[in-house]
Image (cartoon, rainbow, N blue to C red; front, side, top):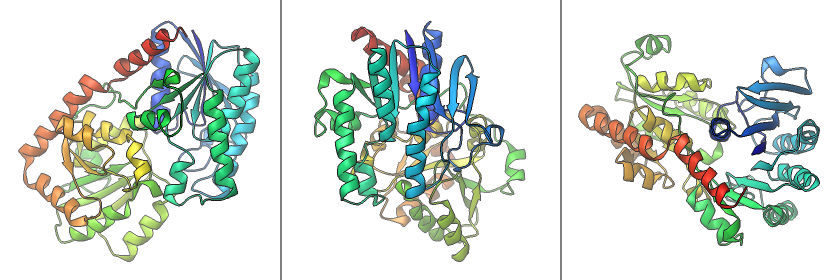
Length: 405
């Protein structure tokens, strides 16, 4: 099979869609298939095109054996007009990338952004090949619940576009069971169209490691018990509650909150930490995936936070699995991953409306190294058994075979 992936997000960017699509491509290659990719010049999450790609409108390269067509888009971070221009510009420039591609046997397009599905569907129809729409987030629902979008003409247009996309797609692929249930229920996507490919984790890249004391010294945090949040800093993650918890722990000098990453909410978080004089909070730039295991090697635990709104219960944050793969306990400030963390007995679920609950969970882990170690071992065992990419992509391939793709 020749698969053509169309996605705004792809390595060397770091994130859940990037990891999932790269892993899917790698597993397809190992199974004897071929993969081609159309994507944007890398710019996520900082909203700036990576230095080695600047000044270009198109670049073809390999990752590592997939032919990748990278096209220009208006790079922007955050929400509002800038992000809309980012989405619209790539939807248009992707046509140039698609024109560079060989005819595939199947086209796979990642949404959101919703507009990107339009050129992908048109290309699939021109080639007379099936198109799979991969839904990693329910738009415009999540934008409305987060307050990024208001009810009105634009919301109505996006709902109409969403319905058209699901109707035109030959198959619709979900990344969580909750998204699949919503697609098959209130979105009225026929069950025979639905496929499933969840987020997983690279258990060979992300492994338990001995504490990297050189790293903790370089960060100026040697001797501290680190509570690590590593990932996108956005409105959806509700990270203000973690600063509330940091205030609860200001006099527990052994603990330090470490925020690693970037996103639309980071600037305000940094400003608040400074204005509140939270000396137990540190911020760092994003790190490559190859450095994540080293980061968690010096952590007491990893922390995952999502705002407590209905639409986000469909999410499955990849950072949860990364923490578990690195053999560290998870403090979960979200209902969306409660089943995974609970099923694996891999951490503590804290009340997202109660900073004291989060602070108490941190104190509990800090005072009980045996418990922390056991939760970390449980998490590692769980992801090895249920969340490896060969397992998940293999299951997905069998779904495709059942549909004779």
